[in-house]
Structures are given as structure tokens and as C-alpha cells.
Length: 197
Length: 197
Image 1 (cartoon, helix red, strand yellow):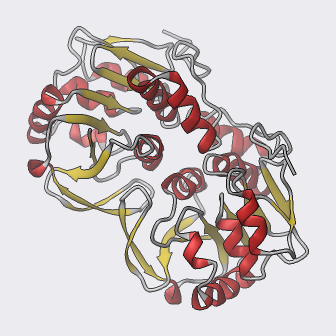
Image 2: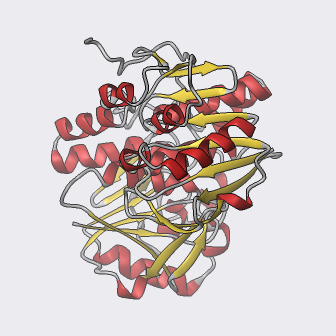
């Protein structure tokens, strides 16, 4: 399966590369790194990574969308959102991490669906779309082919959950063991849940 | 403080970018990505990242050394090890993740020091130096300026421990909260400890 990782300037490093670490451990996965125009993309942590243009991607696969402060501009970027909508519609699965779900929401991909996001940025995320059933208390949320996680680190728990759903819990547990990761496997148990509101 | 991240082909992605996510959240930290020759380095997960030549680094800072399958060749690369020795000696602190400690060990930086490493690769790591006091049961180990972590994900717990030691536990807890990370703060509690041998 193609794993298409959609990057942009000021994406949050761990949002993308926690899930990448896990997804890479399924032998049938082929990971590729994309951006709108291709070329060098710089993460919020100053890391410069080479990407290919999203136009060249095989859309038949799993789309991974990180969050980060770069999403603040992209929620108003019509060209980006149109591209994301096409990619998201054609994807077999679509995983977002942190404020990546704001991008999916603005692209209309999460209309009438349950989703979650970063808990510190939750008010802003909710403001990006009133068509989404935003869940304030969830480590991650699954609604049909859409997986959305809470902030940053929650992406790793969600990705193991995705592996468990698609390849069995034993595979997920083995990957967690291999990377010495203590998996928080209950998606409804959220230590960082939004308490107010 | 300069945070000098030493990369090489086939480094393990999360080894480097878990700690990067945490270290970037201390405002005084300046993160830079290096390799021996500079230019593009490819992680074990196929991610291509731009680096500067280590020759250009300000050595007065914290050195971060990931592990990964790339270490298998580097433990016999005299030029790399000589460079690492110089960098490690001049560094204020030196953090290794996973099999990164095998590189520090081969460079002679861990002689007579306590250290740990990836638990699945522990027999190999121990074979790289008999001058190190290898600890089989530790999430991470601190010996003077050297911090060494267990496999992959343990690097995040160690880096929060490093932040706690240098900037106070409240700062470490705040970063964990901000990235929605469930911090395993006890360095002596190791779910993945080597049982045999």
C-alpha cells in the first residue's frame, strides 16, 4: 500500500514522523513524502526535507496529514484545500494528526463525521468547520476511512490503532515492542481531554 | 544552546525526531542538522533531509546521536568515529538514542561509564565495547554529561528527563502536556528490559 505523507512548511515534526516510524514497519507499505509543489519543505523544528509534487502521487493509498502552525495559513488556501479534497476522497484511508484535522475539515472531507484534534488548539479547530462532530474527549477517532488524532504524540497511538484495525492487534503490539513504545491502546482514554465548554 | 543533531544514512527516524520535537520547545535552543559531509541524508524510513557538514558546527552545545541500522557500518568507520569523539568530547552534553550508544562506545566516549541501548540489539551493542558498563534494565541512563536511552521511543522519555535535569521538572511536564505525551519519567522503570543473560 502507498503511504502518501502530505507535508507543508511549518508542519510539526513529530506529527509526521511518529506515524512514519510505525507505518514503515509494515513490509507492504511504500512511504513517500509529498508537498503541493515538491522540493524542500521546512518543518516547524527547522528540519528541511525533500518532497515530490503531490501531482505525481499514486492516490490509491493511505494519506497522512500532520498538523502544526503551518495549518493556520493553509485553512484559507483554496488551491491546497482543493488538492487535499481530491487526495482525501481518492484515498483508501486518511489519517490526520493534531491540527491536520482542521485541514481535512476545511476541505469538506469530515462533513457529518466525528473527529478530534489538538486539545490546546481545540477552540480554533472547531472554528474551522461547524459541519464536523468534534469530540473533545478522545485520544483518536475513527469514522469510516478517516482517522483523526489528538495533539502531536497521540498520532503514534492512533497509528498503532490503525495498524491493529488493518493488520491485527498482534502486529500493532509487535511494532510497539520493537520500537520500545508504551502504546496507549484505548482511543477513548484521553488524559488531555478538553474539560471546559 | 546549540543542539547539534548528527545524522547519517539509515538513521532511525523517530530516534532523532522524537527528541527534536522536545528539544525545540526550549526557547534558547538552536537546532541544527549535521552529517559528516553535509548534503542529503536518507533515514531508514526513506526520508531525505538536508544537513550541513559537521565541520561547520559550533561544537559548544548538546550533541544528539540517533541509532538505526546505519550504525552497523559506522562502528567500523574510523573517520566517522574520530569526528564523533571530537564532537562528543567538546559537547556540553551528549545524548544518544537506541543504538546511537554503540557509536559513542566505539568512539571511546563511554569508557568506564554506565550506558544503555536498544534492548533487541543489546547483544550486538555490548559486543562493540567491553569498556562500557552496559545496563540491561533502564529506560535511560545518565553518567556525567552522557545521556543514553533504550530503543527508539525511549529517546523521548530521556529527552524530557534531560529537560527536567537542566531546566526543571515543571518545564519537562509542560512540554509533555503541550505535545500530549504521556511521559514515563522514571528512568529505572524499563518495560523492555533484557531479561536473559
